[in-house]
Length: 498
Image (tube, rainbow, N blue to C red):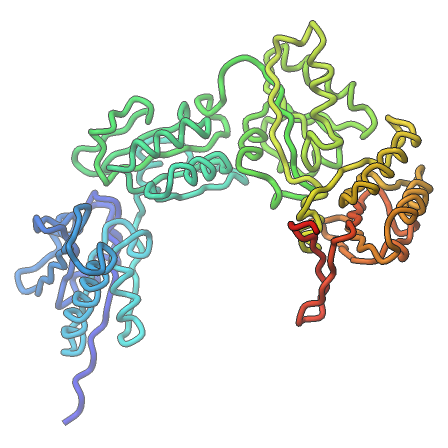
């Protein structure tokens, strides 16, 4: 006698709640199924079953998959996770018995089966043994946007979907860094989600949608919602900012000095991304402005790298007239960069009422050190070799003092087309006080497409190979260089000093 053919497994997306939003394919699959399975809490009521109710027949075999625990505690030896794993294994075994008997099984899922859906736990356990098909459904994200009647994302905006169960600080960082967002799984998480919206500066634009397309639907401003009234089936929405007056921060003008790190978008912090997104006007050296993604409606004023004071005054004048201005700086704005220039001008009487903030960025020394290992692992000094704003005699004096103290040195602005001799003089000066074998990191364009990080000795340092895109890290007497199994070399400075 031939084996009975195995049945087929379906994960059926039912949409957000309104039965009329089920797809034709979902209705067809339910009609073809021998067995209809659905998840429910211990009270036995299933939202998925209620959505599909009018398509269920008397001859359907129904398999309620009842969670042993939802939000309450459990005495299972494996805790909540152990109880759920045991439940999923048992539920999959029940469905497998039907499939082995040749029956077609449709597992109903609210929204989309593979979008935070319980069906995925069955799919992962059964799809490698049985033919399986997933029927996509309208997600609560799309339903919420539709019920709000506002675009979620437009143009090149980024949509981030977050579970409200993340720690509040993590939510804050992610909300600050994105254009648009939807936060799922509210209920008990609502106070933390609201706190994250406020801390990230997004609360005023946040919207709330409860039971989208279902009976009892509620929408409104997130800030107006009482925490004890929020169910699990609710979402927080940050809609598109384009053409949306409610998304524009209100209040007086201000200047935010922003550090973009040593290269492109990978080096931006969430706080920096938020400040750049909120700004009406961007001001900065053109090379650094080009690192910032273009946003509709945002005005950009680029200028040469040698007009720091003029740039600062221009930004403060705009802020005094009510504009939100971001002054864009490479690296960290407080390390040989724009923060000092802005704060110096802001100290003048006519600008003392203009709010000024400084947001940090990854500075070149830290980026180069990480690429080479950990040469800044102990005390170090940071010195600029540029004599444009201070005489070389001062630079030389500071180099001697730092070298005599046996500090690791991070040398910024070592050379340019108009300054070719400082590196050579610095090397000769340091060789009077340091061993010729002292490790030197020569790091160029760190984080950029032409990144080059080499470890040489002080005696081998070639000044002609150093330009304005290079930073030099000069080791102390304790700095080590070791070779790894793959042939690469790393350098590091011990934290203990003899």
